[in-house]
Amino acid sequence: MPSITLQVGERKYRYLWLKYITGIDLSRHCAVALHGRYSRHINETTREATVELDEFPHALAWYLCGVTSNPYKWEDNPHLALELAPGHTQDLTVHDLTVHLDGVRPIPFTDADIPASDPHAGDHAFRTCRNWQFAHYLRARGVPDVHGDRPRVTTLRPGNGQGELIPRPPRTVSTTSKGPGTPGEGAVQRQAGGAPHQLRLGTIDQAPDAHKSVDVITEPPGRRPDR
Image 1 (spheres, one colour):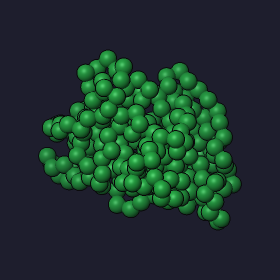
Image 2: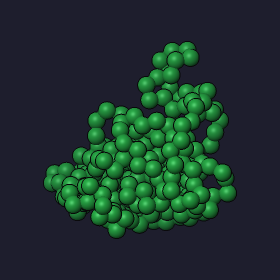
Image 3: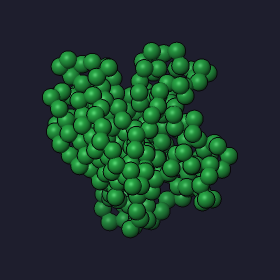
Image 4: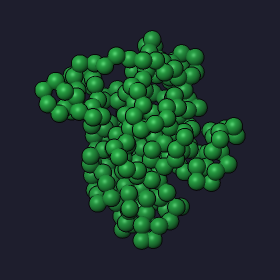
């Protein structure tokens, strides 16, 4: 099982989170530019944690982000994007964080994938947001841009270098409910017993399957910015 081990140094954080990335929203910056769900095991009070990356059934990638406080310094905010890499192990330092990776590897990214045609390309708040930069990295590799807090569940269908949004009927088992047979708000519809599913971003076009399913799951109310 892929995992990440994190040790936090002396720096204090207003926000510290690890997110299972399932989609993107380029109309917004900060954490809400990346659809997905947060790990239950990492937050601003964490000093040390090992997280097996199987908390949720789907992930295109994982993203570790911290927002410093007392004092806040943009340049000291740690950002680490990860992709599945069976057999890979690595130790690294990301500003104040000491990280051990097992079965995943870093994804290097910059603002190079932001096209000049993007309506927010000239906006400093967007352009300097590392979450938004990574969302553009994913978009350049075929991940659909889906706006809104509650986008529909979609399927990412590889084959021509572009993602395609197509409807998918709900499946039968919900991970949360408000009562017998009643799915709760934001419930994830999936088949029971399924292993976590992760798309190899570098091989989307070469995927042997006819299609890959990706649940697009977004934030609970409230933002966790990357600023």
